[in-house]
Length: 303
View 1: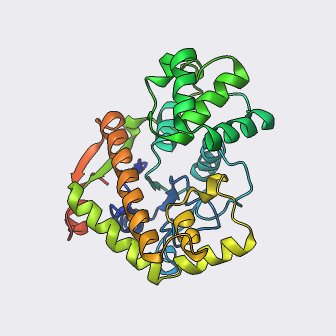
View 2 (view 1 turned 45 degrees about the vertical axis):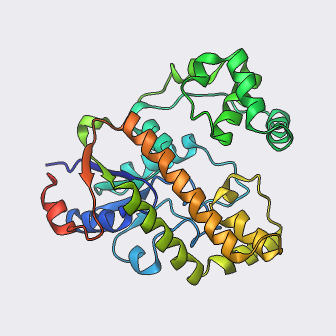
């Protein structure tokens, strides 16, 4: 019998990696990354990519394989996933916290024309000079349909929506209504969503960030700073990068950088949970605890 694809989603620090590896080992499968920041080679520690030891336990794909200067997209990720599913001949465990990747996997991807560099540069300038409010006003006036569907406090999403509208004359909602076929259907997967109590998850986030600091995150930031840190690059949106570099430059203390990074991660996790509740209602909901019984959880999954 053909083994269905296993999908594991959850907010940052929710324990996805450990579960994915255990499932992959039991089904002789491969682990495929669905985290938009873990694809980049630059931030191994700050994005919590699997450790060297974890990578030896099962074949892993799409981790740390993209240079920070490359214009990597959801479409590029989807093409790579398609190639892996076709060529490995093994069942896959697709794991991550980027909802847009899972949405494209299951629902297809809108073929949005490329954004010209001059419009992207103009969007970057508005983001720096005018802030989120400028994009909000533009979209409310010109593309209220798309605006109503967005995370309205997410600068990257708002800028992207404005760039598409400016470049094509049509809003994201227009393009999203014309997707390509899906790569897999939800009915032919085992979709698992890991849920935590907010306080417990925030405690895990805090603990993990402390571990990152003690495991090379500062060294990563020092190297990035020496090479010329460009905050606008998508790869450099890793939470903690700018904050630690600010501390290295003496603009804030390192303790303030750590505190701010933890708070930003809490806020990011909240946005993830909101997205998951809205888009993943039909997934298997798994309530997690500080000492999850992975063996019992795996046995409860129809592998």
